Structure formats: C-alpha cells, structure tokens
Image (tube, rainbow, N blue to C red; front, side, top):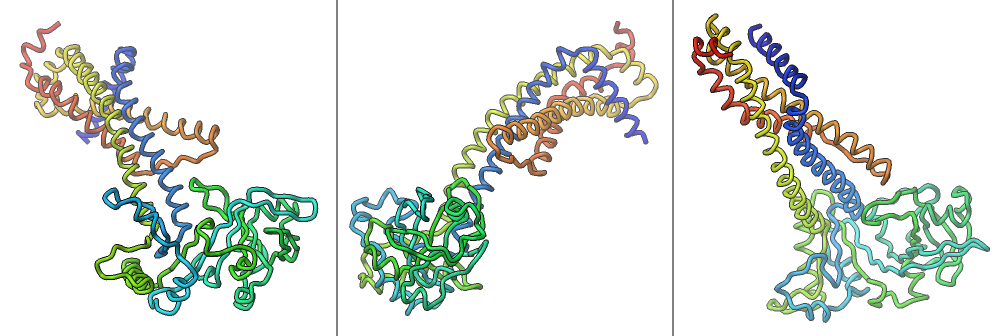
Length: 416
C-alpha cells in the first residue's frame, strides 16, 4: 500500500512537472522520444526486411545444396581465374550422382533459358522465365498447383511437349486461369501442352516466384537447345533425406563429385556446393551492421534526453525543497524521498519512450500506405524500449534523488 501511494504521488509530481513546465519538459523528453523511435524503428525495419528475405531464401529449400560452377560467397584468397577454369555441372555429373549418392532424397538437373516471350493465339506474355528440369524436380521443391499436376515419369523420360506454367502466365494468356490446363502454347518456337498451373506465389524481395515462369521437361529441351551450355546456367540440385543433416549431405557430395571428376587429393575442388545458410549468414552480417548504426544514433539521442531528465529532476528537487523538509520532519525516511524522485524520473522517461513507440506505430502505417509493406513490431522491441526508458530514468534520476534524500529537514523547511 505504501509503495502504491508513493507511486501515485510520484505520478502526480511527474504530471505536474509536465503541466507546469511544458516547454522545458517537452524539450527534455524529445531526446528520449527520438532515441527510442530511432532504435525501435531501425530494429522493426530490419526485422521486417530480414523476415521477408528469409521467406525468399526458404523458397530455395531446407537441407538443399546447389552444385554449381560459381560460389555464392567468394573467397578473397582464392584466385579468380581458377573459378573461371571450372567446368559447368553436366549430365554426366548428374547421372553419376544419382547412382552414387546415398543421403539424397532427390537429385535434379536444371537449366535456365532466360526470359522468353510466350504466345497463345493472339495473346502474348513477355519476360517469362523458362526452365528445363529433370525427373527429380518434384522431390526437391514444394509444388502447389492451382490446377493440374506434375510431369509423370514417362513424360519426363520421353521428353513430352508439356509444361507447367505460373499463375501470371496463365492469367496473361487466357484471362481465366481455370481454362489454362490442356491448352497448347508456343514455347521456344514449339507447341507445348499445359498440364499444370502453379498457385500464385506473390512477389518477394529476391524475386523468387513461380508466378511468371514456365517449367518444361529437360529431355524435351534437349531437342531444342544444348542443355549443357554455360549460357543456361546448368546446376545440379540435391535435397537431403529427412533425418540427415546438411553437413552430412555436403560431405558426401564433395567426396562423390571429386571422385566423378577424378580429382587428386591435393587438388582444389573444381565445383561449388552452395547452400541457403550462406545467404542467411551474409544477411545476418549486414543486418548486424545496420543494428549497430541504429544503436549509435539512438544512444546519442537518449543521452541528450537523459541529461535533460536529470536537469528537470534537479530543478524539481530545488522547487520542492520545502516540501521535502516537511516530509522528513514528519518522519519520512531518506529512501522514501529518494524513491519518490527516482520513480518520477522513471515515469518521465517511460512517457518519452511511450511517445517514441507510438511514433513508430504511426511510421509503420505510413510505410504501409506508401510502399505497401507491412512493418512488424515484435513484442521484444517494445520490451526493449521500456527497459531502455526505465534504465535511463534510473541513471538520470539517481543523483538528484540522492541529493534530495540527504537534505537536512530544518534547512530544507527554511528554504523559500
């Protein structure tokens, strides 16, 4: 009960400080508000950006390894010309991997036929990403269909003239996605029949989406282009079995690939085993630097605000010296006086922090309206803001509160 009464009186004193000295208090709280706003806004933007990028990265698959010529993260100590001299993954690599690898759930050979124009009668969709894949494609990726199905084993082996198309492609060609299945479209100058339409993915930050793509069987593409040409970025994608770690899959792949290419023990790998964790680690490194910038800017603002709060508290002690003397003469202990001013300082900082959090919320609505991006504010960031506010309140209020607690009651009462 005593603490609640103390808290109530401190709140009243803090409110009076705001009401009686509006300009001084607002200027002092401005530093706290700007500091909290900067830190929480930066963290929230980083969290939102990271979450959206991670969703894009996750589309590349968990426990999935890409065997490619070029690495996703370059080693500065490794000569660049050795990367250039590496051979591209080819069909021989793919076939041998299928025979030898024991840890794989699926192995797929893929090529990218760049951006193409797709036609259906008088309808045209431009800049469509066409890819050709082997029969292990469905074991690597999660495929969701608006309508239709995946290729059968027979269709993949015989290279049937069929295709799976993205939602935007079907909509652009037929206006009605529901009638796309079974229609013949012109791809790479050849007629192919649509057997499946992917569900709509939507846009993401890395542009990983099947909405404007077409997938055809690799053996069909072999009749049209050189599927081993470096112009089409050939890669072998391997997904590990459930219960087997990525490290185990990577270790086996490295040994098998070196064996396939007959590399001596002393020779460097002439291939890259890329995985999504490389991207995630790079993103984490970038976001850590952004967080540090947010902290630096926020801390400087908070320090300014903290000095302002300390100034308010010293003035408040001076203005209420007479009241302090009366309280102490009536038996109030030093800790009671100290807590009174300390709680007042903390409440002032919490008010500044709350305004900062409110401004962050308003900021998220502005971002949503302008860029159509939903910024997330995690509860951990709100708790962080409150903890910072309380800490600054304690730091900036402890010295004035201490001086108030040691005032001599007789001298304090005499003070005008």
